[in-house]
Image (cartoon, rainbow, N blue to C red; front, side):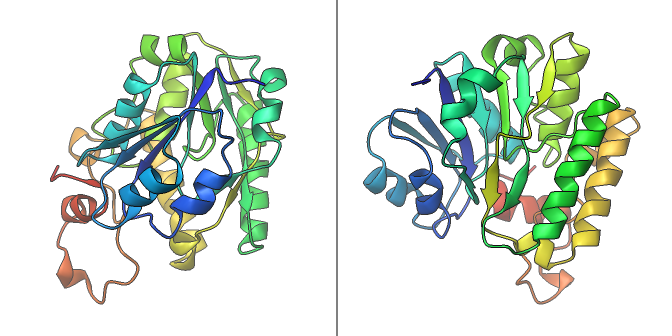
Length: 255
């Protein structure tokens, strides 16, 4: 039984996702939840996983939430993830054989078949990117050794999205080893952003990743999300005039 890993998850109004997420984590695995909700998410965490769980209620952006979780964890490994996924049944059993590098990331597939082809092709892309030396990790399935995390500086707190891919590149550039483990799977249950357009989401991610990787991102853009956190149920853009206001609504304080 490998328990030298802490699952770290940022949450913002995830009452509809948090229970199946927590059910996929064995009771012996420590969990840190950094919550910025105004719904029932923190109450559900306290009621359904009272043991081996640390709940931090903070109004912060996602990069800060992940950083706070790492600083609160006490294990040698951090498993960063999101509340809208579930871990594969054998995920934690595989960790002893998979954690052979300083940073390990795995693919994300569909839990219900929705956008199944999209997730399969994305995982193929991750494998290809890894082979050419540009890791393409997702914050839904990312494990980092404590030493490598802090030595590399932790998350870029200016970023409101793409903070996951950016830290992987920095860890690798700091001289630490990185592995893509195809057998280490999580399953997506909430496809809201893909419902708004798979092409749109892909172009958004690729464009920002390109600018970050080659250090071409203007400093004034780093804290903007380009509509990534926009509520798909909003009726018109007039309800929010900037990405900062969108991020404030979805992940904490005003930037």
